[in-house]
Amino acid sequence: MEGEIWMLHRVAEERSEPKEQRELEVTPQWLESEINAYKQKGYRFVSLDDLPRRGPWVVVTFDDGYHDNYTLAYPLLKRLGVPFTIYVTTALIDNQMEAWWYPGQALGMSRDELRTLAAEPLCTLGAHTVSHPQLDTLSREQQLAEIEQSKRQLEEMIGRPVKHFSFPHGAHNSDTLDICNELKINTTVKSWGGPLRRGEWPDPLPRIDKQQP
Ligand SMILES: [Zn+2]
Image 1 (tube, helix red, strand yellow):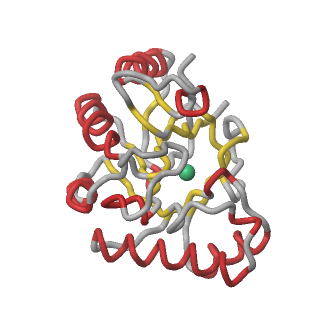
Image 2 (cartoon, helix red, strand yellow; image 1 turned 90 degrees about the horizontal axis):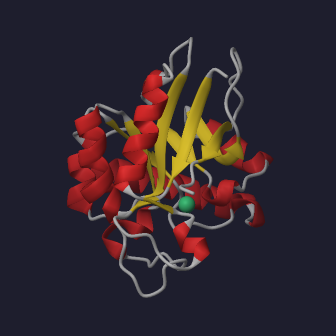
Image 3 (cartoon, helix red, strand yellow; image 1 turned 180 degrees about the horizontal axis):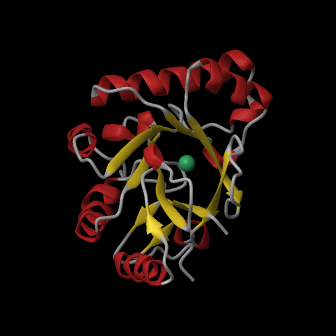
């Protein structure tokens, strides 16, 4: 095993009751113990912008752009010196759209929080569409609109180029990959696939769904 890209979503002091929500949530205590266990095994925690040639290494990523990534994950990872990536669904910023898998809750990060993270050297920001659709069910034109607009909106919000993209639900097809190439996106990730082996750099990159038991 050479490298692992962890996929996380929310960080919460108390996890939700419904299983489909709980699966998206880890406590700060559990995340810290998991990071420390990997450090003890010799893993280095590295940035997506700076993937090393040799492992073992871990990249920590969060999908969607939740407010708790700012309030709970960010201080923890800063204290531990762990780089991290957040893939932002742009309509969740300032809760323009509700995350329908958490009905009635306003969980999105604010624009100010996003700007603070953009200035944080440990943090990399990537795009994750505008409205979180299942991309492989859309036409090429609709996919282009979702991917291009989210990249541009995020670039406008943070004032720097966006070079990374995560497929909502991991869903993608050949059009998705073509569009990301055309838009000069450096790396794409899916939601499954396990660890990376030495010398292997597939597109999209596999991730490990990091679930707290
Ligand atoms: Zn997502």
